Image 1 (tube, rainbow, N blue to C red):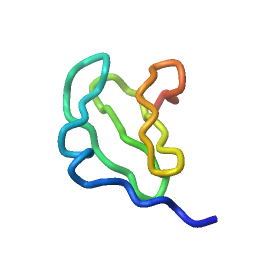
Image 2: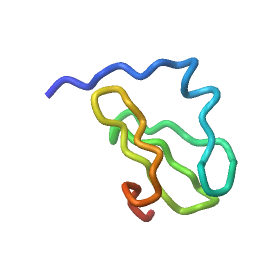
Image 3: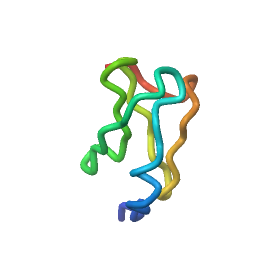
Length: 58
């Protein structure tokens, strides 16, 4: 399966919807990680899914 490319400008402006802190991009897992919230938000087809209900706990 090919990973869709995520827009780097988008990654620069996105923040955690719960804590409003910056996110770390995990290219291998295709996730945006909020260390403060302890959540990883999935990226599907190049689109970050920023819903807490869709995030996994880390």
